[in-house]
Image (cartoon, rainbow, N blue to C red):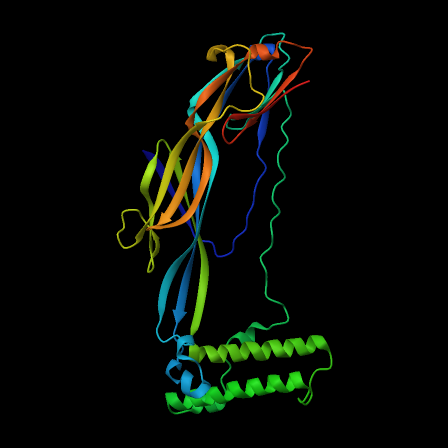
Length: 360
């Protein structure tokens, strides 16, 4: 069994922004009957897919590229086409609210546990300990083209001779000669043989860049253009039990990512295998078994291997902690009764497991 949701989006410019987690401090006081309600999380696997869309457009004078410019036929786009490639698959996990895992932790009036940190949704983070968020990631600006390169030269500039040419072949010949002249001009600048060459380095860079841009624009009329867009898709899977070759999505060379039922694409499978491993966290050894109605309930997650395959080829494999494959455990609130030995508890917000218990 499984729950799979499909979140699909195209990114032309990618930025990554990680906001700080918002938490709320809840005090266990007389006004709250010394109780704090909280939720435990369940595990959701996230699958991130990187793929590319390549668009090729044939040049107007593609059939003359070999004879007039000496271009290798393999480097010339002879016909328009669009195709997609599956580049990379990665996976991660996150904890989300489990609405079926709501608990109330009740403390005695003399308890040393006076506060609890929760997320805004109610996930438990700490008991009797301050929560310190991780710093947000910095946003990196997208690279921009140098201001010195004029966009006017990125488009082909046609001469009067070209415009007056009476046939396609003649136009191609005129453009080929223009390309060779541009190359000659650039060579003269680099070797110092050009008349009226700029004396400063910055001026030289600008002229060379414009010559290169104009040559590129003219050459593309022969060899065509190939542009690649980096694209991105994300899937969420809530594993409830083992998953064996469940179709996550299908991938088509002609259409990119398509639905799991669209037979135009080849299947991309996900396998989730419960390892039946439930490990006790360190430093958790209550002297007596606690009852859930008078205790702090937490998760002990299980372990599972997650593998993603494109057809028969494995693209990703890793091991994850998964709450649904583990069990619940309880700590007695009597742990906080000794005022001489204050206790602080830190939880893993992703799994609801205990990360650390400190007594001092």
